[in-house]
Image 1 (cartoon, one colour):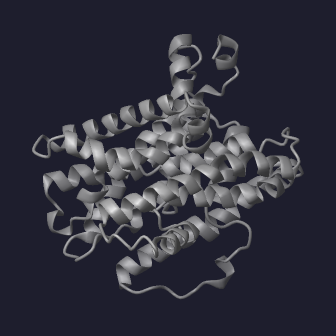
Image 2 (cartoon, rainbow, N blue to C red):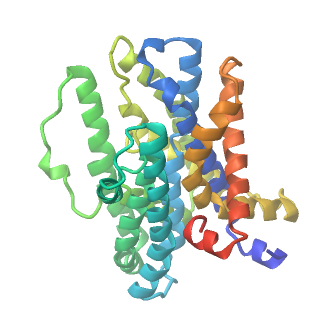
Length: 361
């Protein structure tokens, strides 16, 4: 990659993409220690809880970055061109990696070892119903968003900023507000709240909101004063999440993970805070060209790293890092080592054009 190609990149998005995959890896590294309810309150549990809590922005930011890049009204691809380019690029690796993870799960992890003659049916079920391995859910969701993106582009192209803001307000109320209300209600009364039909607003549910939010926040100008307020709320949310997880899980037989959710209002504010911070940081003047090339390389490898990192973590890193060392050092070491090994696997795999197409796009 030459200097001109690097300069044409949106550098803050490349940096965010690299940090976001680190955040995702951190969530997976700490997940098993957090769910041990009997250890709630211990130093080890608190460290894992805090690391996990401060990493929850990773997945929503991925959707926001996709929105920045794909909702640009200047993109004039036809619907067929867009779907062929995007769905093909991630759809084929999804099927291949689903097969890999399904085999690993049944024959090496869970060890249920189904009969070879019955396994094709199990494999098909794993792929169709997203059961191959739990982290692959993200790709299923991004595919569904890609399917609707051509229509979202037309909406964005023919909408002004106020209309886009209105769409985001509807999403916030129906998704962030609704989920937060439901979570708090169940925590206080220990029962599900009644269905609020008016909050079931078509077209604005789920991760589509983060997708559009990314485009919106990249488009508008935010004053320094407003940014300061955003950072304060995001920082407060960083502190609040691990406390809420602890206070709603202590004494229970199962961890209450509601406050980790991508649609909890605290995660929402953290995600906005992180995104806005990096958008307004002037990296071009402080990062040398050679470092930019490395960042772009790491950014381009992110999808491949996402696909392979669970195998690396479960079958290599967890066996290398001693369990007896300090919890903080152990978590950081596992995250960094998982990333480095995954990155090297992706870069080596990409040397072969078939592996690059089917495994590491």
